[in-house]
Length: 511
Picture 1 (cartoon, one colour):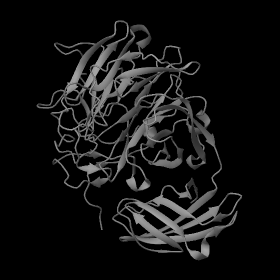
Picture 2 (tube, rainbow, N blue to C red):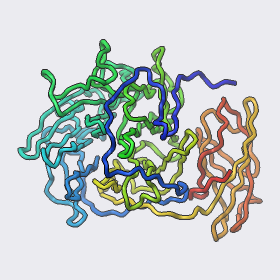
Picture 3 (cartoon, helix red, strand yellow):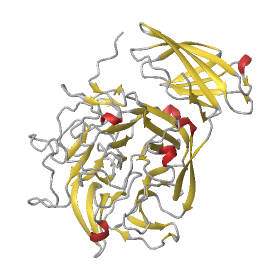
Picture 4 (cartoon, helix red, strand yellow):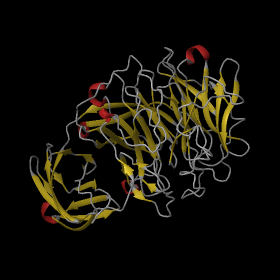
């Protein structure tokens, strides 16, 4: 039985620049990455990684974003929801006096409104200008402004009405390798995309915007780049770079290759991460025709559209609720472990997700630890080292990575036919202590529905499988193995489970 019809363009190998087809080609003037950034790709298997955090500061009030000036000062700038920016230095800690205060301009009503994003231009050290994304008084309009530190002046550059609902404001700001400023805006809030914003081109809601803030054009305090994909389309906003987004709270550019990673918060069934090659403007990322890989209930699917699918999705049945997009690690301290690896987390589950191109057109994936509770943003120093802030109680945490040997390995055997398949799993205890009672957790591909199982007590929730021990195989001695398996229906995707945890610990993948 074929899969339901989907006009997705698939992810390709990163080394081939993920050349997914776009409905409208774009020819962005991408520039080479910073000369000092080396594209070091680690080879340590992802399940052999461990991410940990160390709290280095407290007393932040609902922090939302982190950015680092590349001016030799080793500082971090941290936004607070109410409208202030705080400064942290590793030697002196968190300064008590804010760097700037725009609380008089910020609407922080509701959980998702406030000062949401910050970006520093490449010439920050000389100009002392920075850029802020916030919801503005009196009506919550999502707003992009330039702030001039030398004279404490706030200049509004671009605003999008967002009055009816207080959620889904987006808020990420980042300068791309082309020198342009990119800004994410949510779909307008509510639930189910009530304004059908995701698929519309006459609004900035549900988009990532790309503008040139180095120049002015006519009455605009910025310029729309001539190679933006919709500058010549009647009825479309020329500032739009990408569309079909729900609430892209955090996105980032890979310092080494300029590719774009987006964490787009889901409606309730799927959280997703997108990975796009440099210069791929005009792509439709699916919302609200799709949520993740699945057709959305009440979908808005204009005819003739081509959708670019995410490279990674996970279900709230993992304990997650809102993906917090991170960065590709390009620092030095842990380059041999996680160089070239994308790190993200989730606001509710605190799971640290690690993704890396697998050399075969897909992505390795693993859960490699936990962040503190309610992380809202992952940022980097000027040298590429990772920090994270959490919402409540409001702390700053340094992120570190280490290598560990997995204490389990899972070998997979798949036999597929027609609309069915069997999956046999061999779980080996590679640790030094017995496992006495176990739960193996893993995802299955969309469209796979378990019919029966053996040697386990198995529960399927959406695409998440929780397989627990039977009475006769509860103990796995060091070096010993047990087998279990299941019969599943499928709708075309017969891929085996891509990752496993045994009692919460990541397992190595065998065959």
